[in-house]
Every structure is written in structure tokens, then in C-alpha cells.
Amino acid sequence: MKLWLCLRFGQLPLQCLNRSEHKAVVVLARQRVFRANECAAALGIREQMSTATLRTLAGDEPVLLLERDPQAERRCLQNLCCWAYGISPTLHTWREDCLQVEIGGCLNLFKGLDAILTEVGNGLRSRGFTASPGLAATPGAAWLLSFAEPDIAQAIDRPLEARLAPLPLRLLDDFTATVDSLHRAGLETLGDMLALPTQAISRRCGIEFSHFLQRVLGHRDDPRADYEPPTTFSDGYWYGYEVKANVELLPAAEQLLQSLCRFLRNAQLQTAAIDWQLTGVDRRVTGIAVRSASRHSDWRSWLQLTRIRFEQLKLDTGV
Image 1 (tube, rainbow, N blue to C red):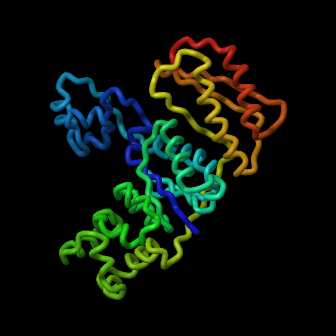
Image 2 (cartoon, rainbow, N blue to C red):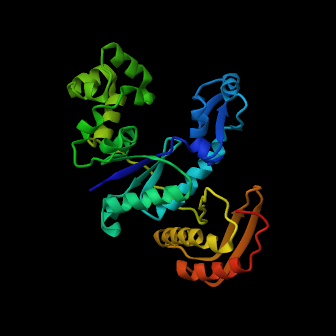
Image 3 (spheres, rainbow, N blue to C red):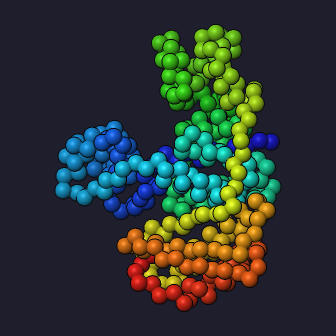
């Protein structure tokens, strides 16, 4: 059974630049608010506000203003692909802020859906990312359901059309003219549209929209190029607080090494070299090279080598 997990990173433009949860951070695009974290939202700052309005609302409260960086977003999404490839070798990026991961083939390996979702949730939290998940038999439906309430987004035992029904038509932003036409006819939700006869949808909305809908519902194939793993692996761990003791680095190192070695096994690769980068609270990066006499994918051996190097490390600042 095909089962797609869509991870929609709505805050990716923000979280790829700054993941602080303790100060107001805003990402701007064309001098307007593009994304704002919870601290900024608590000040009343909303998307599409002008910078002038933002400063008025903030008053004397400090707000970190950052320019949107699409290249950084793409790099983050590719790093997340590296991590997700350790869970399933069948995945691809979707739009500019989503991963689509086929997990139906991994259910036995992880001993069930709940275990996979727990693994994914823990992995995202440790990397400082939040995602809205959707589960369905097709990538398009999984993406749409990532906008639904959690009890609907993950209710794979319910009929797909019933789960899609409450969602607003405005989500279909690749077909704005068609959606405007449906709105004029009094249709507001996917359920309103799906209640129409198939031939009526084709007549009213056109063949391209009809094919899109068939792919969402699984009535037409939706071929996508699978993610091709790179020959280098990159991943990160987000503490969310200042680490001052070397020993505190090891649990993060263990988790990242397990992620690396799952990736290596799925890609049928081995490595003889790892480069750690420790980012200080002052944004300076300390590099630590770890080398092995032979290529392998055994995370325990890499952890032992890493432990030796970390024990020799003198931290000048918190990590």
C-alpha cells in the first residue's frame, strides 16, 4: 500500500535563518513581513504588514529583521532530504517548502505507523524545525491534508474524499482562475466541488484541472522523480540553549551519527571522514575533523572516534 507523508514547512523561510524561540524574529520580502515567529506574533505582527507598521507595533521591543533567503531555504530542504532518506529511500521535494516521503514501504521496518511518526517528530524537533503533516495514498492529497486539522490529516482509516471535503478551494492556488469561477458558482470547499459529476468538473474546469484532481484522488498516475542522494551528507542538531560542557555534545552526536549511517546504508555508501561544525553563541564555527582507517557505516565506531576528539576539545564559548 502506498502511503505518502507530506511534511509542509510553513516556517521554513524563518527557521532556515533563525530558530530562536525567545526573541521576536521577522523575515521580510520586498519590505513586507513574510514570516514572523511566535514572539513577533505576540506583538501583533502579521504577514504582509509593512515595515513601518511592524515598527509601530513593536514599539521599544527589539525585533530581529532578516531578509528572505531562498537559497538558504533550498539548502535546508536538501539537508532535510538527507535526514528523511534515512527513513525512506522514496521521497522528493514538493513545491518550495515540502517533503513528500513514501512511508508505506517502511511500516514493517519501523513496526507501525505510530513509530514512524514518532521518529519523524523527534527528528524534526531535534533539528529545530516544525512541519504540518498530511497522510494519504497520493502526494497531492497528502499535501492538501497538511492544511487540515490533525485528526483529519492523519485519519488514514477514513475515506479520502471525506477527509478532503472540508478544505477550502483557495488551497488550489495553481488554478486561481478556475477557483474564482467555482466561487462565483457558490462552491467554497473541495467537498462542494467533489459533489459535482466528473463530467461536469471536466466541462467547467478544463482538462488540466480534471487531471490534477484525478491524480489527487489516485485515479491517475502521478510520476515524480525520486530524490537522488548526494555523495556528501549534511545534518544538524538544534539545542535551543547554550551548551558549555563537552559531554553534553555527545547525545546530539549520537543522534546525528545514527541519521548519517541510516543514510549511508540506504544509499549503499560508506565513509572514512566526518567533519563536525560547532556553532558558538557568537556565531563563530569550530571545525573538528574525525577520520577512520577504513570506510564503514557503523555509527558506534564513529561515536567512539568522535568522543575521543570531543574530549580533547576546549570550548571558548557556548555552543
